[in-house]
Length: 119
Image (spheres, rainbow, N blue to C red):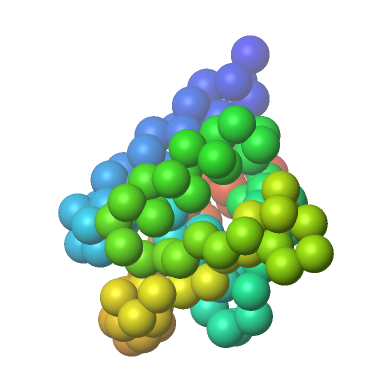
């Protein structure tokens, strides 16, 4: 039972971290992960984004749509297979990534809860 209580603290810390991240960047953590996956400049297929983010296809599809609506990524159809969607960063997306790379993220609160869980 004690582990569940410690796990609750991790969830709370993660929630607070996500909230601060969203306030600072104007995007959610999941949207940030999509940008992170694309930051190398190489086009990615939808399934590659799903694998990177680690969420279900339907959930990542919604996140992709949101990031696309915000103008941070561009969607193109595959040349060989028109059913394939290929994603890259837009110019706004590149600017957002550059802005985020300059930030220092504080993981101390999250880390402290993980260490407590291991005790």
